[in-house]
Length: 234
Image (cartoon, rainbow, N blue to C red):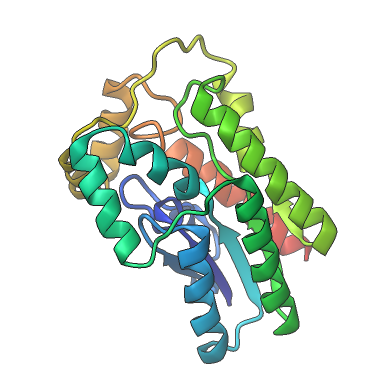
């Protein structure tokens, strides 16, 4: 059994999870949690190691270590929402150095427990690949790459795949998460339905996401193919 840990990208709410597009779905378990951060995920994995004998861990994390601090200053409503998430244990790392250190600590724990590990780097945050947020994503993804190389674990470059796709389009001011958190709640209610999430993504002029961050079926299928190929090669 492959345990798939991550945030809302893995969970698939809003949007759709890559697990929906895997060919061998029964071999994968979804441990995604909306709003989760590296620190929160590390705590959840520590509990799961004790309970679950599965050896294979697929880890997708880091988006909210960047996005939560951004949203906290985005609007007063988002600030209140982020404060609630942090109180629940989904605490973002202070900076990229802290992020890399905590990621290393997580891998040490998994390797000591004899786990097979595959990492997925952070997807684009917004479909404008040259934005300030995506430049920050690049810094964090370099940290993930360093960790993967040093620990000799698999790394799926999902961000690179997305950029290759997005660079085929002329994107100037793409739709992005609004300053009203309730809009994301509404997306969470609507996007589990395939035709609705397809319509929402198209209506907003988006190519790989439903809101600039969470995956549509094109992205989810692409990531599923990469995950399946990596797991079959192990």
